[in-house]
Image 1 (cartoon, one colour):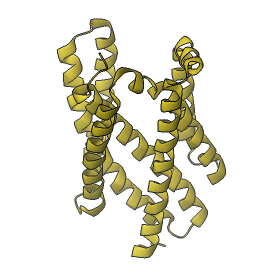
Image 2 (image 1 turned 30 degrees about the vertical axis):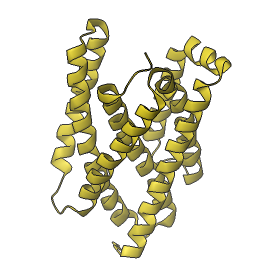
Image 3 (image 1 turned 30 degrees about the horizontal axis):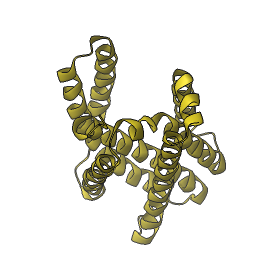
Length: 223
């Protein structure tokens, strides 16, 4: 049964954005605390690769268990991922001026909000666009890995610009997909609660990648 009442879908997206906000708050808090705590900085950067691996394992496990975990476990995994992500993001406050970080964050929020709104209201089917963007994202990941060894600054700028475009597109796609999820699970409150957490993760990842790409392009370093 498909129930698409404005009240029901508004409540669903309120949960999605509440959890996305909680995730960003946790990540930002952990990142800032780490950046101003010498012991935390030493811990993070002495085991940075291990933390990255743990972060990757958590997000992969989180996604793979989408149909198996309870809403409570989904919340715990999301909070854990947000905290671990905060550790890896702590370098932002060490490399960039705080006012620059704030300005870029605001810019990312505006761009994210506009594309999220578009994805919510558009009647155009974005499913085919989503597939193209996923393949483009894989290509960008490969190019980023190559550029780690090449170290070409112009190529790095190109990757950042394309990344912004890709994740803005994915934001619209994810919003439309979330509407479809709501329609599919509208009669199952438990499943809707879990899908809100997974939707928050998808949008969290979109926003963080938009923010980091913009920061790489426009952020002012402390040097």
